[in-house]
Length: 248
Ligand SMILES: [Fe+2]
Image (cartoon, rainbow, N blue to C red; front, top):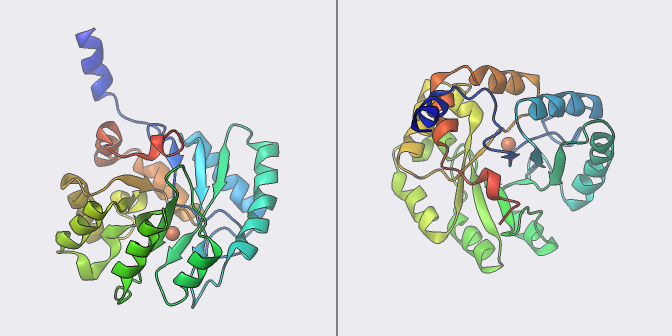
């Protein structure tokens, strides 16, 4: 038995099935910089399913400047995709939420009701890559007060905080979850971001992972990444909560 466990522990991970659920993706066609058609989405989602994901949360961008999405644009577009997926990838479950940029318009979206997922009402949020929104702490606090659980997308990608772990430690203490991008771990955004991503994992600051797949390029990075030893190690040791998000 012991010998069996020893070999099982060393076996390379060839899929992402240990994660079960992807909580960050751009598969709803035509409403952001992700997939451009239902056909493209279905082709990508078949690959997501083949590489081990059983549940996918669709999180289109919601931003004042570039992607002026809302419940009104997201929900009908999701229904179209959902119908097609139920018809041709029956074993895959799709959920709808959003990736909200914390900007001037965010509070208005919150008044309308944020698109969240899971029992803890997780809401994926991101910051600008240039500078954080000045009142970001108030916005996050307000979300927590309203019963939402913010999930900060790709903390490894905010260059202005690339040596400031204290910002993320403070967020974790407040109950905010931290989502690493799998493409960051694969090296898609360069070696510095990859190093930062693994550094945050080592410090225990990462609580979940997401694909952030927009198109076939990202998808290929994800599948090729399974051959990397560091990705296999991450999946073997994955101390992330992806698989429990809909089970809590
Ligand atoms: Fe994203």
